[in-house]
Image 1 (cartoon, rainbow, N blue to C red):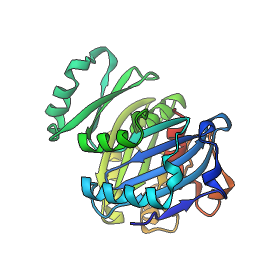
Image 2: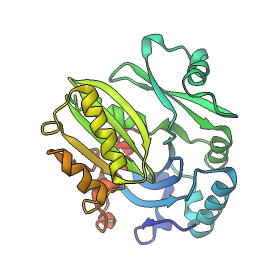
Image 3: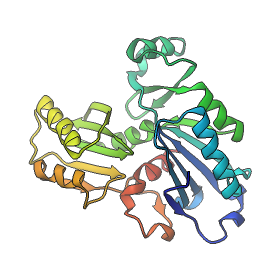
Length: 281
């Protein structure tokens, strides 16, 4: 299993780890690894691994073994290690209702608590809400085995923090991952929806978007639709969205962080989740 995207500066193995940070973003079928220079707000390097099915303990172990052998510099003692989980099961609750001892019960009621799952919570201070999510115990254990001091969040946390910080009034943001996409809807300055969907065809995407537009009484000619992540402007999905929506754009994410020149062969919006997460740490 080889990375599908490899962006490495010359002599990446010589970067002083004490001055740089490592960031892992772990989804249901993907693993993104980035090298950051927080002081300069710069993403220097990136590896993207996509599995053909949801991660299981064996496939994860094999993928990580390949990475260790091919890129031994990953196992340096980095200044910091940031871990973002992109698992689908997450929910938001007001901070005034949040009790640490009750978070497992909430997840069990909403999703059915996964066997041997761990439940975590992230505060989104801009909106006084908590993001609750669950992660397979084996996965979290494997990650911490390699990076014992890793700091953990859910990927939805920085994405929502960015939108709240922007004081977003009205928009639909769609972030694409392999075989799935995440929709966030803001209307009247309020978060109306944050949901993950699976898709196999462009029509699956536009069906969900049009359903949401109908549900919230939005105008397809006026609502800004921001597309991010693994989508090409020439793709069938992009063309299908443009059929129904007038204001469609591809955004690269946080304006505070930047990609190094070594990323120039790829569209910047491929790495929107990387930039958004980096801006949160």
